[in-house]
Image 1 (cartoon, rainbow, N blue to C red):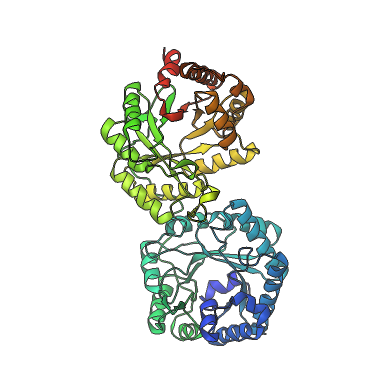
Image 2: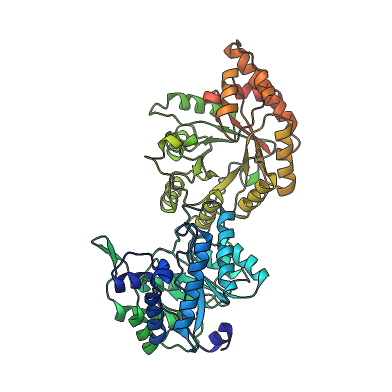
Amino acid sequence: MKPISDYLKENRLLTDGSFGTYYAEKYQTDDTPEQANLDHPERVLEIHREYVQAGAKLLRTNTFTVNSVHFHDPAQMRRVIQAAVHLAREAIGDREVYLAGDIGAISEYQLKDSEEKTQEYIEIGRMFLEEGVDILLFETVSSPDCVLDAIRILKQERPFYAMVQYSVNQYGYSGAGLSARRLLQETEKTPEVDATGFNCGIGPGHMEQLLRRLPVSGGKPLVIMPNAGYPQYVRNRVRFADNMDYFVLKMKDLAAFGADIIGGCCGTNPKYIQKIAEQVDLCAGQKHGAVQTESPERMVAQDSSFFRRNGKEKRGKLYAVELAPPLNANDEAIMDAAHLLEQAGVDVVTFPDSPSGRTRADSVLMAEKVLRETGLCVMPHICCRDKNAIAIRSQMLGAQLNGIRNMLVVTGDPVPMMAREMVKSVFNFDSVGLMKILRDMNEEVFPEQPLTYGGAINQGRRNLDVEIGRVKKKMAEGASFFFTQPVFGEADAARVRRIKEETGARILCGIMPLVSRRNALFMKNEMTGIAVTDEIVAQYAEDATRAEGEAVGVRIARQVIRLTEDFADGYYFSFPFNRVYLLEQILKDEKE
């Protein structure tokens, strides 16, 4: 049997259709199809044979949900994969049908750590390769990073044919908020991936519309496996309408458009595949274009970044000040502070996004009011805790419409443990994932007035090399500046200096002028990521007056400036209780 790459030079490859939805329909059960590899092997074998008899030339193992989210025991995962491979091979027999190990997307909600997800993809891939499977299909993927990293590592160990399929909605965006164009661009640039395309998420009509908006790859084979349509829920069960004739008609169009590997996802069954085999031209076709691996150059009409003025970089140190939005609907204190900063000439005022998981006034709406009433350059923080990709994209559109074009992107603090039964975190992605969305929106939605965004640096991370790696990833996704956690002494300063030296990032060092011993003790013991040492606490007398406590905070802030002035691009001030009047005292000598 010739290698799949040689087969594709002369033929389109017809795959099987859905296993999961067909299994549920055929056997009228809500049981996990993957567990049936062990509990009901005769059912699995029967479905595979139906697809082979229908004309499928590529059969996928019944293993879509075989990962630690659904199978907690690695030994159980291995047994399921071994059984799935054995059953698929038995169904194929001596026919010339390719076998692919099917690896579904690992939940973005339950395995949030990217390194953990990458390692799991690697382990699952190894299980298939150890069973002699030489095609791995990663399907229904929403973000490429972990999958592409896993494929690179696996291919260093042994050769195999790697296929990656992304799932997007009818507007062309994945669950991680990335555009179809961006997904294909990144995959096209990955030589270890042999074929790529889309599956699930949308029906064949929307899949055709998507591809007509998006030039088809001229390099890698294009894989297209849409759903039969969109599901309906009848008596708590998923149902798809029988639209076989329409589906096959659209698959003809998709094949003519340049799809190299075609088949079906949810809602399809062996009858769909048989009709495709009978009616669709399966001779190799030509593509209609090529995905651009780089975005076209565009004229930028306006640069609104806080570190530029009249198209030129601002000279000297940059000064950012954080104002905490109120916990209630009274904005008198924050507006008083904003008007003080208006007179102080700071470069940008920032607004945290409900830090520590405590509800505060919305950061974007607060920024809009300050911009409108003071004219200050404003920067809301945008965290990933509370909103999914749809909500965040919507929020960015609203911010742009209101003239807010500077953002600080952070992963965000988790919801406090006591509130987790009532309040659920979203964490659709982390800060790097959110930056991918903003980069995407700048290219496709805001080409003339792009958003400027930066990230946070936690110089206190135990493994500083990991933090340096994340800074580099954020820079690759378009982050143009960074704010650090508050710096309090030489150790913090040295770590930030190393990050600056190894990344070349524009860094504003965090400065938090603590105003009392009580304030210092609270920050030391109850705020993670802020390294307040015993030496810092000791400088605050227990019986100090308000003025005396503030004087200590001002003195320590000046010391931090002296420790970092040789490498810091500026300073990011966070004043407890919005006591921004202390800024003038801190910077008095510096500006003079």
